[in-house]
Length: 143
Image (cartoon, rainbow, N blue to C red):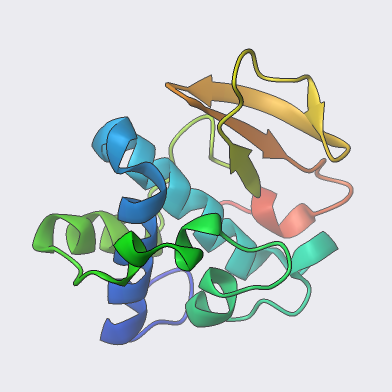
């Protein structure tokens, strides 16, 4: 079961992504990156209309994740990362990534908006941005 369709290969792929994108942010930061990924699969809106699987989300281009272009991403998924990936696939959500579709690591303060999306909070080095409920209702659905 889960809030997005998945197989073991998808869990491994998401685990590698969250590690590569946010290992320095600790487990909670990695879970938040996982939330953004799962939200993108569920969204069906904005830049993510055709993103219907974890694989499509991870390798989306343009607009995907920078980590997929680094060798670190291609290392084997660790058990701890797999457990984190399963948690977000099963529907656990963490603020400020609860409804977020984007995040990035600015050199300083988080901007109020990023590509016309509202800043909904920061966790350590990453700023999170979410669409409005009007623009993307599916990321606001309670799982």
